[in-house]
Length: 250
Image (cartoon, rainbow, N blue to C red; front, side, top):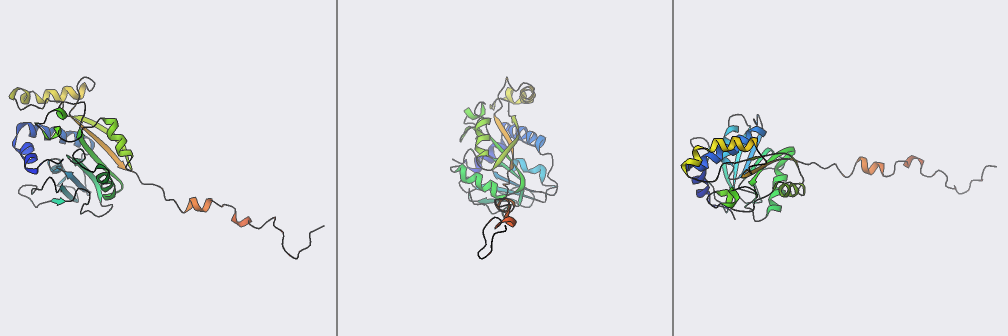
């Protein structure tokens, strides 16, 4: 079940909790992908809050928003880069994306298998994707006051297993959103402390969001060398076979 784009916009841009969550997730993303010089960056779901750092240097930035969610123009005051699309049929040519970011896309999808196949299609060889999902062990997936309380939360092993089944190779992961999902002023003022504490004590505090970086796997071709080696001694074919009309050597 996709959330409405108006609810997502209100959370990330018009609430203190949403702005804090946006900063925490974006900072964690930038530790993995500090730049995208000359690359094509695609976001799906409601990934536009994370795309702004790449607007200046990327070759192209596209924010894809699924039809059941709805679309809004973004970024404000600049040429629009957001596009309304079918959840599993994107207006991106095959192999044209260098970086792909999913936020509120995978966990809310009604057809995650087809969605991951579309992710694999648009990525070029060696392309990388960031899958950002609610952490099943965190507090954020247990509260419906934020967008992370909707859809299917994941454990790290569940997410990585699903990615491997769809031609992705998980490489790195981080956890973020250690602050409680509360709008109360005390928790908002202490949010930086919780984020620092969570990064230093990962076993004591479960972050609300998992971020997994995965690379598109490119399979070796099934013909060519493999087929040529299947019969490596064709030049010797016929040796040892009798030839009609020829007497054996005595």
